[in-house]
Amino acid sequence: MILFFYFLVAFLCFYIVFKSADVLVESSSGIARHFGISDVFIGLVLVALGTSAPEIFVTGFASFLGHPDIVVGNATGSIAANTGVAFAIIFLLVGKKGKLADEEKFLSGKFCSVNALFLLPGSVAMIFVARDGISRVEGFVFIVVIAVYFFANSKISAKFAEIPDSKGGAFNLFLKFFFSILTLALASRGVVWSAGAFARGAGISEFVIAITMIAFGTSVPEIATSITAMRKGKIGIAVSELVGSQALNLYLLLGVSSLVRPVTVKNPDFAFGWTFIFLLELFVFLRLKKMAKLKAAVLLGTYAVYLGFAAGLL
Image (cartoon, rainbow, N blue to C red; front, side, top):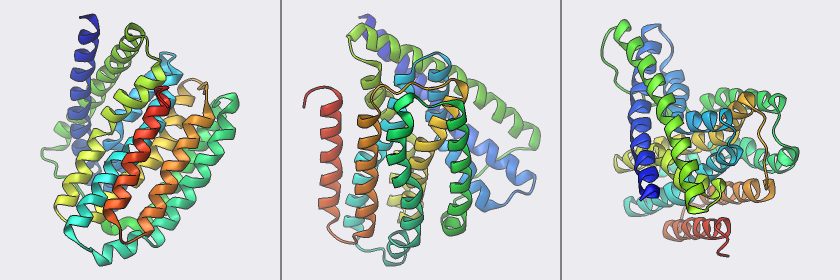
């Protein structure tokens, strides 16, 4: 009965986190537009940060409260969920819609190359960097890397910037912004507490809970946004937002968390080795223009094997 209570609290907190993130995206975009900030910056930076707000706040509070397994599990598990589930769905939907030649050509070209350059070497480097834990200095370096990534990506992805509608005057937008930050903080605290309590009560490690329940839960906004974009035929928006989320998970989440408190990584080979495998599959498949169903099956199968190893079933 007590485990069901913890699960219910986690579910409720996740719901509040998602709703607060939506308000954060809308209000921050409205504030930026009010002060004349470019639509490209709003679409590619603020929206990306807003949709990743659940992961950012949850990992930040997990670090503050001394739960490094949740920090690493959520960051790497979100990359696994985005690749193994969200991109599998995208490939299936692309297969049903047929070729989207112009956008597919762009995504498999410069966009894919630039993002692979930032993410693949980074995931390998993390295996070695994290062996002695992630220090505040290393966390600061990660923040710099993600800033450079945003700059480089904005040059090639401007055509996919999508600006959310925002209503109300400046005062109301600021009010919404600060209220969404507050509710995000409180709800994220609830997610970390309930997940940790559930793990202890069920005799499951916090890392396993983080890469499953928390990682999948915090990835729901990106997954939902990408599926909606695909249904509208906007493959560029769907893919660019998800790939951008991968970069945020790898660099920003770990960077922010280690600035709050240095992060101990118990098994960097598993955490970041699998991260490299998922990202490698992703960029190889983005370059392949056919076999959509096969690509989706491979990604889902890889995700299932990943979960099996994490849970000690394989």
